[in-house]
Image 1 (cartoon, one colour):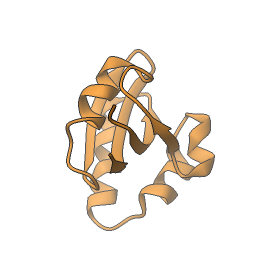
Image 2 (cartoon, rainbow, N blue to C red):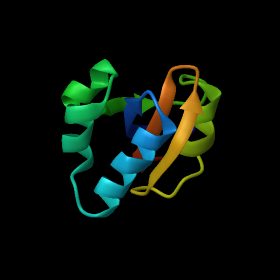
Image 3 (cartoon, rainbow, N blue to C red):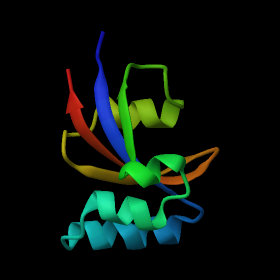
Length: 92
């Protein structure tokens, strides 16, 4: 079974998500942006979600986490919780 490690940033609006993605693409640290802006408790640890398998996260997460290139920042991804930026840090 596939396993992945990822981190994310959760915000309320698509606009804020796009703004943060632009900051990261311009060189800002994903972890620092997560600590400052994410409304998820994982933000305190740089957005780290640890390791998980398919079906452990909401379907919108699975689609991205198990298909995106490792290291790329994906999003905005809309879920019932808000808008996310996702970064797959490893997958096996």
